[in-house]
Image 1 (cartoon, rainbow, N blue to C red):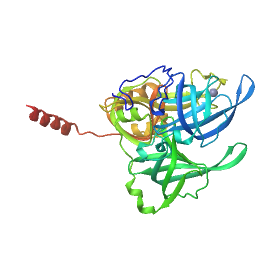
Image 2 (cartoon, rainbow, N blue to C red):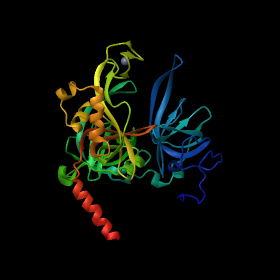
Image 3 (cartoon, rainbow, N blue to C red):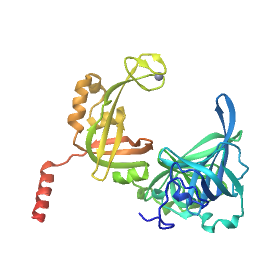
Length: 383
Ligand SMILES: [Zn+2]
């Protein structure tokens, strides 16, 4: 792959005085130099070895994108400042690059003009293009769901609104840090929000510094929003997605499937009625299926909870109740192994990769004769 800036790819441990663009940052770089503007910055109280300490979380942006940062000591900057950062370092956290401002860091305010105008202009994006690091965005989407909660912002209670937005390409979560009087079904033009990810699920975040306009509700109709089926290689590249469908062959049923016992306190799976946190305790019986689905382009790991497991096996609670572990595992193997299934739900990522958590699942009935005929016809074409 040829890098967009400069022909030679210098990826690791860059120590030169050259500025790095945010979009080019990789995990585990040291002595990183950046020029950007502070899009958000918030203090957070933490306890380190019994002592209270204030650290700062924020978002830094330049003309190539945005990145979340953590400052481990106070830094003298405000939202909107253009800053030059030197001696920062990067780490990987939940599958994305994170910028750290440690003891050696230097953060200096500088002229706004030093940063190209493009750094401040939001990029037009469809909902399925939203991912952390994309920078400030200009999005038009329909509100499918909105919830209100109270959050504590710098010691003050504040109303925060969050929910789900969608367009004809997909769904994402959103968080509004101000009351824009948003209602379900509203079509919003949000100009200037930025994207954070939680376990790979994109979340559009905006506050009063952003323009939010209500458009005609029919600009995006409810029936234009469908649950998209995503090929698995794309899911792996995107590192997560909200409310999508996947389809593929069950190529593996993993140990840990079947009946399990959970601690009633912390829901951890326990052995011999002993929880590593809560000690001797009477477990509560649960049921799950852990499997790997492959669609020919990629594979993902999926955990089906009790309800989805029963749904896909076509069993009700009474039928399950009288089964023994061996019988259940046989049933899972004979019904699912090698079969085409369709799952609907969320894809979440962590350090180990993607886990698909379905809310619905079904075995696809494949007409064996029809499939055989298709293959035979295909062969005739080749021959
Ligand atoms: Zn426990």
